Amino acid sequence: MKTVLYILSSGFENKKKFENLYNQADYIIAVDGGLLIAKENNLIDKIFFAVGDFDTCQNPEKIISEDKIFRFPVKKDLTDSILAYKLFNENIKKNQEMEFKHIFFSVSGPRQDHFLSLIFYFTWLFNQ
Image 1: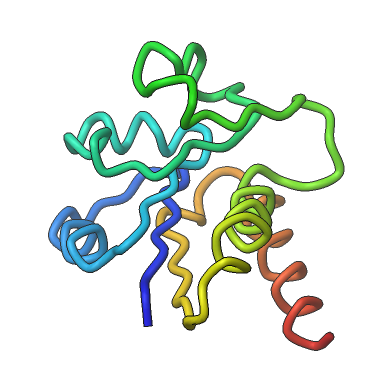
Image 2 (image 1 turned 90 degrees about the vertical axis):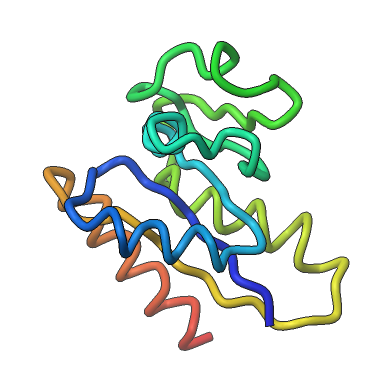
């Protein structure tokens, strides 16, 4: 089983836990402001791709190569986190015959609407 770590942008307090997560990850995906967290922790070389409307992390191309950036409009039906999950599953997972464990890091914070949308989306997805 491979591990996919999605770094979101709510911040965190437990650096040791974060280190354990990114050290065990096979894929690291930065979601919008999560790219700033990746940069602060010297993880840019390990980022598989970055996803978002980049309203939090402006000018991501100054941090990571443009071929690793998937940019979406600010006004959209899905959150950046859900888009990251869908992108991985539709483009990477479908080409591999293995199971993946998905870990979303730094999801709670001031944007409770994003946190709730993840809960609702995955509840819906796993009940399909």
